[in-house]
Structure formats: C-alpha cells, structure tokens
Length: 310
Image 1 (tube, rainbow, N blue to C red):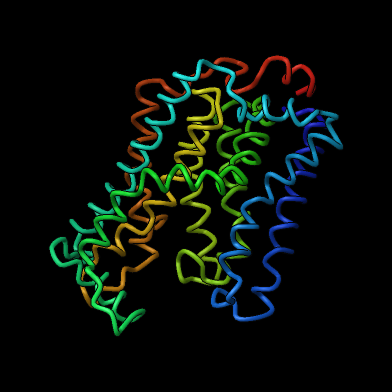
Image 2: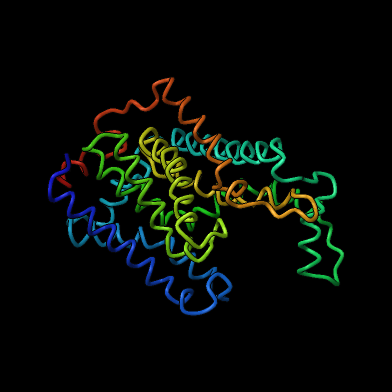
C-alpha cells in the first residue's frame, strides 16, 4: 500500500500532467481540431507535460535537485555505458520487430492490401500532395523505412518529455505497491493522458469513448513493455529509444499500402487491435521465462529511493 504522502504526490503529478495537456490542446478544440495549422507544434508541446509535472513535483514538493531527478528517473547513466547501449539497441530492434509483426498480421488477415513493388498507395499520396511532380515513390518509401533507426534516435528529443514523467518518475514512485500494479497503473494513466488529442480523432479516427478505450488498451500493452525495459535496464534510455522507434515506424503500413487502400485505424493502426497481438505474445513470453521478477528496488536508485520516502 502506498503511503499517504506518495498518494498525494502521484495525485498532484497527474493533475498537473493532465491539466497542462488539456490547456495546451485548447486551441485545437477551439479551432479546426486536427486540421489546425499549429497541430504539430501543439502535439509536440503536449508530449512535454509529464516532464514538466515531474520537474515541478520533484523540485517543489519532494525537494530534489534536478540532478537527483536525473538519477531517480534513470535519465543519467548509472550503469556502464555499454550495458545501457546494448539495452537501447535491443529496445530499438525489438520495437521495430513488434511493429513489423503487427503489419504482417494485418496483411496476412487480408485487412489491408499492400504493394511492395510500386508502393502505389504511397505514390498516390505523393501525387495528391505534389501533382506536378513525378516523385519516385518506391525510392522514397524504401528510404523512409531504412531511416527508421535514425528517426528513433531523433524522436528521443520528444519522447523524453513523456518518458521522464511516466517511466522516469511515476513508475519508480509506484514501485512500493509491486512491480505489476505499478506497471499497470502507469500504463493506463499514460493512455488516458492522450484524451485531449484522441477525442479529436487522433490515431484512430474515432473522436469518442471507443477511440480513448483503444488508446488505453494500446498504451497498456506497450506501456508494460516500456516499463519492463525501464525496470530491467535501470535506465530510461531503452524505453525512450523504444518509444522513439515505435513513433518512427508507426507509418509503415501507410507506406506499403496498395493504391485505393485506406487502412482501418481501429484494427490496422499502429496501436490498433491487431497491433496488440505481438505485444501480448511478447508479454506472455517474458512472463513464462520469469522476466517479470524484479528486485525490490529495481529501476530505483537507492539514494533517491531513501530520500523520497517511498
């Protein structure tokens, strides 16, 4: 059971993270929704609301220094660099395999037709955007797929905003209730935090409770995997890289879809129902080989653990 002080800190953290997300998204709700020309900028800013919340809680409530937060969150290297690098590389490759596996299942079930020769769907999209230019769709598509690992690293500039909050501060703070409950809670609240954008139709084209439920489901599966990386590696870098890799690879199906195909985001989207299958299989496999057994303070620097009183 969490101490009252910890429950209070978690509650304040969520109020700030959720509140700022809704405030930042307000211009989208007031004008044009996802078509607002500032959407990209606003969505990027929203990604930093968990980090802002973690910094405020750590410095103003817990009395930590920024340096202490870096250690507690796992953002500062506390293991040999080689170990963190290997975990991060594994996270990158593993995440790409998960995304590609989901796409393969979508294709094998006949949900979406693909064109791996002419990339006709992507060519169609390019023509709509630049009708006067004859752009080499196949070359551009292959280049984008090949650039996913690079995109994963650059995406860390954004995913750090979410990961410091959810897997860096919240997950370790919830560890006293047990690893599995902490993973579950941190993953579910991460999904719900996306509500300001999901309820506008983002990700699933379902601006309703179904869209939010799908996001919570997808974030629960993926959040368990990201949290597992955080606790096992004792570093925030592997989940940051994994999160970045997922975002970089999320458009894979759109790149290879055949002309005239419009993938159903509910089933075939990057966090759609089919995408849950490889994640669930991975989680079951990890459980069967007993990889969800953690030391008492897994993922938590001992000095920071004592200082925070959790």
